[in-house]
Every structure is written in structure tokens, then in C-alpha cells.
Amino acid sequence: MSTLASRITMRDKLAGKPPFLAALDIGSSKVACLISKNAEGSKSVHVVGAGHQLSRGVKNGAVTDMDALERSIRVAVEQAERAADTRITDIVLGISGPNLKSNYLEGGVNVGNREITQMHVRDAINSALSTYQAPDRQILHATPLGFGLDGAGGVKDPRGMIATRLTVTMLVVSGPSAPLKNIAQCVTRAHLNPVSIVASPYAAGLSVLVEDEIEQGATVIDMGGGVTSAACFYEGNLVYLDSVPVGGSRASSDLAQGLGTTFAAAERLKTLHGAVALTQVHAFDVVDAPRLGEDGRLEAGTTSKAELTNMLRPRFEEMLELLEKRLSKASAQYRPLPRRIVLTGGASQMPGIRDVAEEVFRAPVRMARPARVTGLGETYQVPTFSAVSGLLKWEMSGGAGAVAPMLGKMRVAPTGASIFRKATNWLRENF
Image (cartoon, rainbow, N blue to C red; front, top):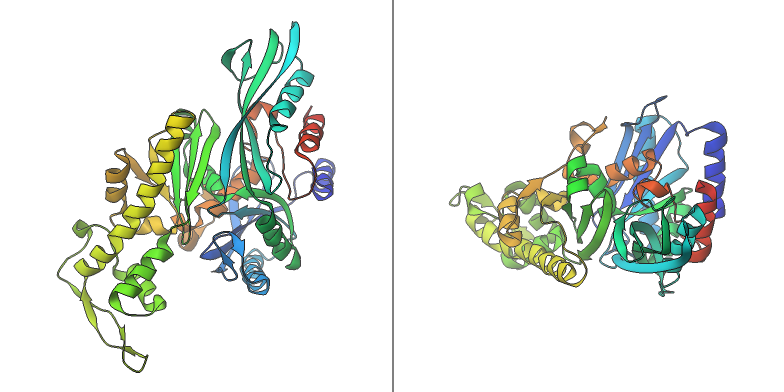
């Protein structure tokens, strides 16, 4: 645990939870900030301030212009602070990008036919984490998925049981170290302290899934502007995470190319009149579609809604098909992943996307937006803000879900501390 996170933890123990919690989600198309107020004895999330800004200076999870990203962060946070009438410093940071990955780790320790103690659990976890060899990547989440006693798996809490050997299977979610450090640097330059970093697809799942889906299994597909991500949940844990570098912005680019117009005009057309299924539009309706003229200026033009649909659908099909192939490969290579699909994210608001997803995944699909979060209002109670809402729920629950429920909370901050030392410090603090 970093020095900063240690100070925050000690402050919380001495003074209780802070009066306000803040979450900042940095995506390819937007930067969003939500501030919630802690009510005495309440475990619900109530938003009192919100702000968002176009994401500038970041592309596919990597910083391209630190000054531009810092300005976007400042504007979004200041909007939320004005609405909440407070100032914030500590934030939970959500990050996305095609380079977020999940891996399974296995480790074990000899118990000697004795009762398993917390020390044995710690040693088994450290054994698994020590097998992760990726110096250029930073672990964001480490989740024990289950323990095994003498080869018999499926044990949730082995403490108190007797065995000769204890093994553990873990899921770790990681991101590239350099881009994570650059994003954290931009946040710090905006005079904010990123006390925790969470993968946005994971946070989106916490925001939109109901308890039965988390337990029985569901796959959340977060369709953003630059990245489409999948987070699979089963038995209360995150069991797989992956993403592809294709999002709603690519569809806008296709529309601009097909119509011969600007990206901004294409984005507006997509938002106002776009669809990916002809059943969702009056196909022969004609809409204004300005085009670039000989002098490089926009000129009046028209197109049919059917033509717009035919240009947009292939790209949305592609992004879902790419993700379906990734999920099918992971199911065959590691473990069967849940087939129940939940769509969220800004690009999921495209009319007809549910029909396309059901065709691609050949499974039931549910559309989802932030749930069990009050105070969002009409502007923010939409799929676009699922991830940032999930960050608040993650923080409100004390970081539950970053590790298995029996193991409590582990915050992983972007520091240079070794994985082994992080796990040892965390176990010492929680037990």
C-alpha cells in the first residue's frame, strides 16, 4: 500500500468516513466526475454534484497531451464541486483502454496436515502473486477466485479446515505502467489525490448488475467512444476482463467518410437520427446531412435514414463480433464465461443495438443504466455514466470486489512497491 493510501486509511479509522466521496472516470470521449455525500449509517450512494467534459489529450487509454487532459479534468471536477458546494482532493480514479487485461494465477503452500490459518492463506496468495512476471504492467485488482485443499477445489474460505496442501486461483487485472503513471500525473497536476485506481469496465459492472446477475453470472459490455470492454462476473467476483480498440467514435468516422462531411456533423447525425436496425427508423424519411463543398465549407445536403443505418450497422457489428471472439476464446482456454449479456455505455444508446447484440452473441441481452444510485438526475441517469457511478459504489462498499469478500479490501495505488510487499501489508492490515 502506498504512503498516501496508508494516510487515508488511518484518517478514516480515526475520523470515520469522509463527508464526501468523489469519483473521476477518464475515458476516450469524456471525463466525468461525481461527488456523493455520506449520510450517517447509510450504505447507499447519493450524488450531490456532477460534472463532465469532452476528453482531450487522451486516446485509447494513453495520454497524448498532458495539458489538454489536465484542463478537461479541472473543468469536470470544478463543475461537480460547484454543484456539491464543496472542495475535493481525494478521488477514486477509473481508467479504460484496450490494454487492460486479466490473467489467472495459481499458487500454493504446504500445510502439513494441519489446520489452515490466515498465515497459510497469506502465503498461498503471495505464492500466486509472485508468479506474475510483467515489469511493464501495474496490477489494479487481485481477486482470489477459490481455494483448493489437496486438489479438491471450490473452497471459498479455507481457514479452520485441515489439509496437506493449500492452493489458490487468482484473477489479476493489470494495465501498462507508463500510461497509468501519465494519467495519474495529470490528475495530480489538477491538485487531486488518486487514492485508488479501478478498471472502468469493472466499475460499470458494479453499477448496472443486480445481485442475481453477479452471483449467477453475467457479462457487462461497456460500449464507449474509443473502446468496447467486457467484464464477466460469476459467484460474486470478476472472473474475466477484456476490451477491443473500437467504439462509437469509429462509427462516426465511417459516417463522415461515407457522406463526405466533417466528424462533428457526422457525430450529430448519428446522435439525432442514427440507428443500427431498419426496424427502428422510418427508412424513407429524409434528413439534413451537410457535405463538404469545393471550397471546403459545409453545404446543404440530404440523406435517408436507411442510408445512415446501412453505414452505421457494420461498425457496431464489428465491435461486438470482435468481443464475442475474445470471449469465446477465453471460455475455451480458461473457463466457461457467462452468456447473459448486459449492455451499457454511451454507444449502447444507439437504437437497435440490442437486436444486433442478440444476433452476435446468440444470447439474451439486457440494456442497463446506473442502478441504486440516487441524485443523478435525468442528465446523468444514462448508460454513459455507468462507470463513474460504479466507482462511487466501489468506494462506498470499502473497495469490496477488488478481492474476494472473505478477504476484505485491498487498494492498489500506482506506486513502485512490489506485488509481494503489497499483499503482505494488506493481509497484515485486514487481519
